[in-house]
Length: 276
Image (cartoon, rainbow, N blue to C red; front, side, top):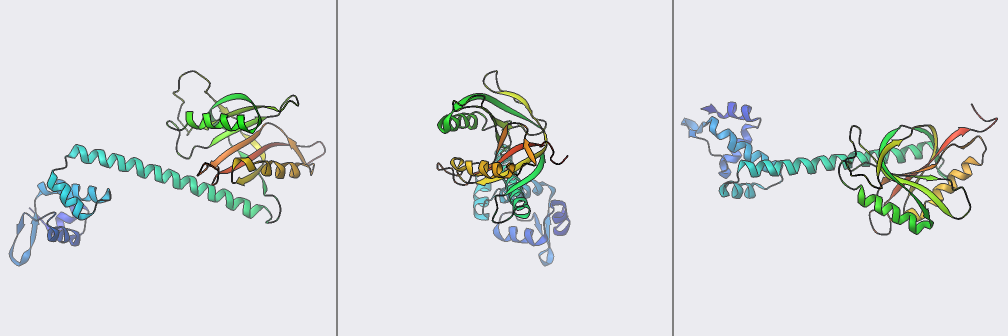
């Protein structure tokens, strides 16, 4: 038998919690000695762990009492805990992604004028991504392509905060067609297990320097970010050095595209006679 203090220490709870559970009838001590001294047996530890696990799962104490009386099995409890663990991990990843978006916005606010288009210079690292390549004509076909990519690459092995990326290659002719690569960045150490088909794993190259503009709002308004970058390039110090890159930092929150946050990037090299 263990005193209430020792039992609390073994279970990593407080004696106050044990007294409260006793009052509610959730965990009654095996023995109550002179002066109301409570004593618990080692066999009561699993019962206390069930109570604590169900509490972490969000059940009320009344619900916990009912579940214990119904005889919830260890296998059922383990299954509920694994589900809760997966949900908690998703929330943490979503919060981490939100934190990164906030950092990105702060970077733009700190480095760009409030009245001028927000264009910043930075480096982007290499990454592995899963992508497909297609020729599109007009916004409708481009939107359809990105819908297919979103549907095909919406689950494992991608993390919830894995960004979708589009590379827009300059057209060779003036017929309105664009060659586009569209896909999603793989988490570090993950591989694409998908079958052969339109999607393949490839390297998304690094750039030592890009000009980037952040756009918050529907994709239909992305030309505003492109215009800000074009105006910045017109200063003449740098020229484009590769396909434009669209990085979806936050997916749309509704059918109208509101809530989306996209960063448009232009890889750069110094113009002739410009900065080294």
